[in-house]
Image 1 (tube, rainbow, N blue to C red):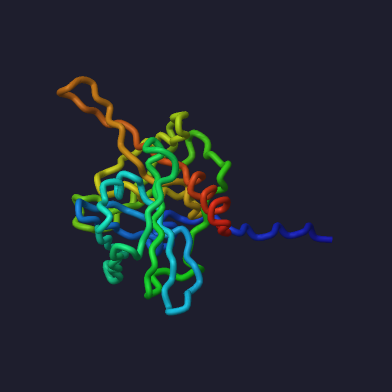
Image 2: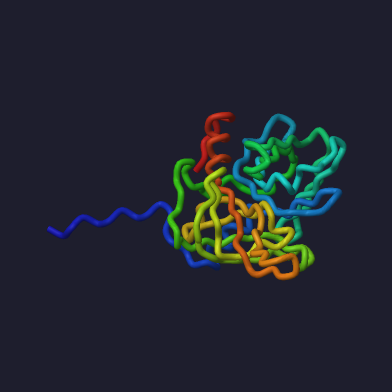
Length: 231
């Protein structure tokens, strides 16, 4: 009798170009009156009566922390073909934790479908932490590229304990804040928060490390606050 076949992995390992191809469908440039950053859709609702769909985007808190109540947001897709205008009253922003977590979720009601449900990416379980040496890729819209999506990669160098933060051997350029970091199975691992430079003295700055906030806080909030199902 032949040995039993190994069941297929639900989330097979992919090449980085394949990960990018999947991820760019959920990534949007977030443009505010004062600047821009990166965000990604992690959940969407069924169409409501009247045709609107609710989307939940994740970004870094500092991308939206200075917004005034009457501010209009724009969400621009990676191919620039979808530009959604979120007027005051059509969106709500929630900060998760205090400033040190640098994590925010944006709930917005939009009439058009900007992403299909089957295009959403899985998120790492709330209690999972990747080991040192694990390779990650992340995406965002650097301010120096005029709104063009860019891909970066690096490895987990270490951790900061309060709050739990990944330290990544890689860069975070202005505009990439809030972008998703993913593993080779296109699981969302976290979001870009900041770049920590190595300041030797007031005249000399050397390459440093990127700070990456784990997605666990977002997943916990979705599952326990909204009772949402996360893939």
